[in-house]
Image 1 (spheres, rainbow, N blue to C red):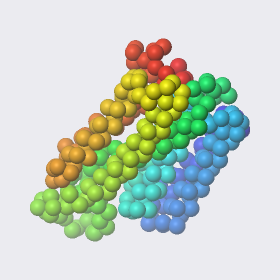
Image 2: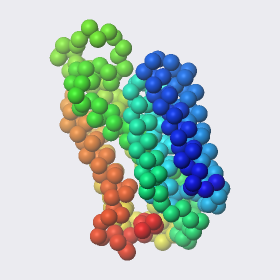
Image 3: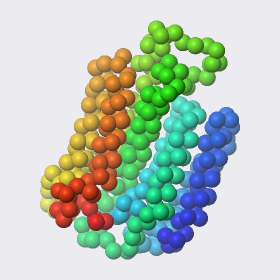
Length: 285
């Protein structure tokens, strides 16, 4: 398996995911599950093939981590769909996956077999994989936050987000919509809880890896600093939701800001002057 095969696997996976997204709008649940899971299987087959051909986990470069993110986005989408039946989530997760796949196609990274000694650790794969899954879940929470703040309006967004399939003629008055807000935010809160839990596990794996590789659990490397900032940003959201459950709009903006910080933690730090030549996390630079 070589990188040149990626486009074929990607096209098949995208077609299957898109078919599942369309089927979700048409309420064809069997088609949704079959096509989405088939697309995940095809995409994961390429990841496994790369793993075998590289003789290491494909997790070293940004392009390789984008592979996992593109895989986890539809996986998070189908999990959310199966739990809360949001028809639109698969459309958004597929679109986001296509964006990251396109970046890999137009700007491929160098996928060599070289793996520096620090990365030759049993903590390497679980640390990055758990983080990528957390990023996918928190990416889905970002999509939900944008959706609720979107052009549909707060009342319409509240009804759509809650999974309410009542006829459009049944319009909620403002008092009813206000009463719904604490309840409808529970799925979003749960998604952030799970995403932050996986992020915390990923940080713990990273600390154990750092102890093994460099002799200390935490060194305030630029990557570690932004990871801590991101972690606290989502923690602030959780505490705000618990303290002010009626104030949904500010919380949604907090999620958007937290997701921007997450992007900074993931790839933005590669462009910081303080990172150049000093960070032990910029392996692909």
